[in-house]
Image 1 (cartoon, rainbow, N blue to C red):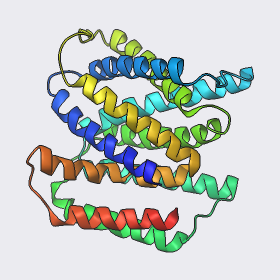
Image 2 (cartoon, helix red, strand yellow; image 1 turned 45 degrees about the vertical axis):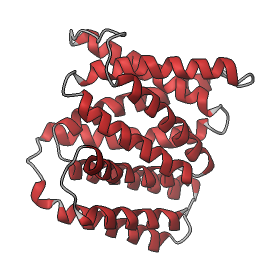
Image 3 (cartoon, rainbow, N blue to C red; image 1 turned 120 degrees about the vertical axis):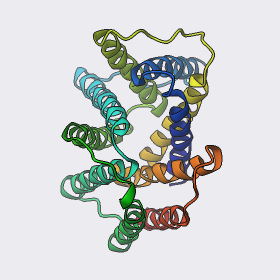
Length: 276
């Protein structure tokens, strides 16, 4: 579980960097440049570190791996446009929906019932209830299209987590992480071209390379954590990334501190530990 927690922390740092960067660039521009760098990092690791890994065993597996990455890429795009138009607590609501979908699949199809299920779920629900209840006055009106983006994001990320869990039984986690980023780059690049948005000059100095390095660690740690646990535990712990983001925003961006940030985070983490 510690790998998933570390992954959430790295993603939280990425979210803070995103807040700095997106004020100067369009979301798709950032995704394209970030993906170019993360793909380069991943390919270098594969060349110099991993001598033996499966590429594709069958045509069917090749289709399944590519479909997994494609769904994940669209989930990222939906997430960006959804978060841009909504509040954090709305995003968390839909993330929790995604975790519920994942848990339902694992229970009905795989027969996986986490230990201390009732108590763990109760702690997680209590932690997010504390967070959402205290945040209720900050909620802004969300359009129907934004709800669609976030709902699509939740479904895509749930499906990707489950499908990658199956993929990790056959393929190396770094290979899958690089594959995911290559598909993200392809999808974002196509959308950038379709929307007639110009890319960011690759050698222009900004914080995107730092973000790419942080995301690389987050993706690999998240993949390894998913491999040794299951998609439900992974999706639950990934929800803490939003709360870690708030803590980092208080420290790095000097935003107002709220006591319930710590209380809700510790309650959710305890619930996730019980489920693991």
